[in-house]
Amino acid sequence: MAGILGTIWDGVALRRERIGADPDAPPRSVALPAAWEDGAAAALAALAPGSGPAALPTVAEGWIRRVTTRGRRLGLLDSPEEADALADRLRALLMSRRGAPGIEVWRDRKEDSRFVLNLPAFLEADGGFDAPGYAAAVATGVQMLDILGQGRAPRLRVGFADLAGLLAAFRLPYGGEDAQAVAAAIAALTQGSAEAESGRLAARHGALHPVALIWPEPPAETAVPGLAAAARAALDAAAASPGLRHQGCVALAPADAVEALLGAETAGLAPAAGALVPSRDEAGRYVLLPTRAAARAGAEAATLLMPPPPAARAAMEAAAMPFLDAAPPTPVAVPAPPQAPRRAAPRPVAAAAARTWRVSVGGARVALRATEDDRGGLREIAFSLPREGAPTRALLEAVAQAVSLGLAHGVPLAAFVDAYAYGPGAGGVVDGDPVIRRATSVLDWAFRRLALEYLGRGDLPDPAEEETIAAPVRSEPPLLPLDLPAQPAPRRHRALRQAA
Image (cartoon, rainbow, N blue to C red; front, side, top):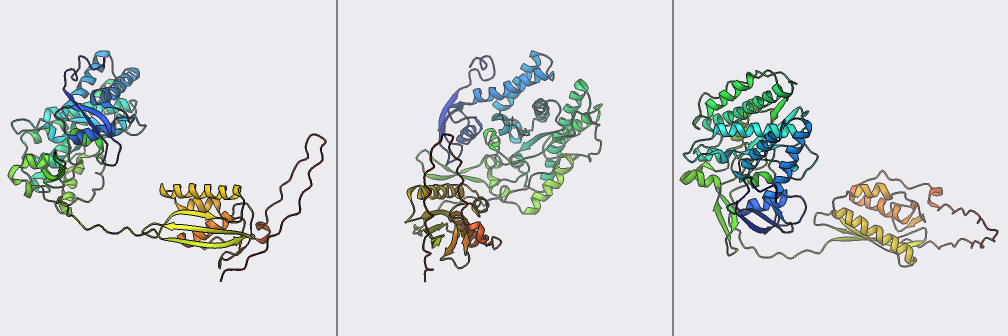
């Protein structure tokens, strides 16, 4: 806690919550600012490393300290004072829920990092948009990602979230001409601010790329006061740079838990999912509550936040794309507005389907049972060998359990077929299978039978007759002059008749 004293976290009232990252995840204890909602608590449970208790200030200070320490070590932050200033800006953005890095930074993963800005968090009390604050936040994101990229990453990923929430605050229908102008201006402001910061870094550490002067004109005016002028000024500042450190800086990405932590309800350019969100009240009853976008839209929420046609999303992408360095992610299907659940009569659970084959392989009787899921796919297998010894039965039972566990965790059946088909063992003539006449072992027959049945594979022919005879075990004489034990004559099994 020593690193928190004297920072913005000092004196922040926290509340404790026991919650999982999702309804199916085990709950963990988290602490976050008292005014933040349960969705942010679940997001913190997903972002914090490990599975134990996690407090937002402590977890955040972990990645902030990594950033500033690396910046000082690489010479990208010239002094302790500059490192402290960057740390203060990152804390302020997170505490105001304006911006934060993606989950890969929180969990210290070796992946391309991103920094996301929550657009509605820049709304001012008088109804305006804090364009200077947004431009400064973009610059902070660029500086942070440049440090995480060791000062050598050619491309960065600074993006924004919840454009739909910003449009709702200004009562703008998604996809309309006014909304397209706002999307273009936001993208232009992001691009200009990012490249201006890249130019400032180039002035300090050396330019690596030329300035690109190929942007179209940003909107001359928008329904958001001051936004168009701020976008134009940011692009002009970028154009005045002597050079850049990065080929590209702006890229939108699908949402992860960081958007939920910041309170953003949609990712990037995505439209709102509706005016209501399902939730539970204090008594645990199912209720529908207004979204944040609906609260901003007021009486017009139901109309403004209706699911738009696909053409509206395409129009928004076309407006913003000239100012992005990468195409936006493919949109997911927009869900219909939630409705109260209807109680349905319980349906009986059907018993799992199963198939059993009984054969003999080289005279050894074996039964293979295959249990199927509700779509007819293989779910698990089991063997029965009534006349074999305990070691052989135990071995095949262990194989069956391992295969069943693998199938349950997504391992394809084809992988097991490749591993066990034509495997060595006690093989011979197969009685009871109309297709497979010879096998090198019980496992060979079983997995070629499963391949035929569930994969439709007819490319696994019977082995040659000489391949179905187990090779004799060669015994080296002992080092001491002892007589070798007499080798018993091989036991012959009478072949079983094919079952009628």
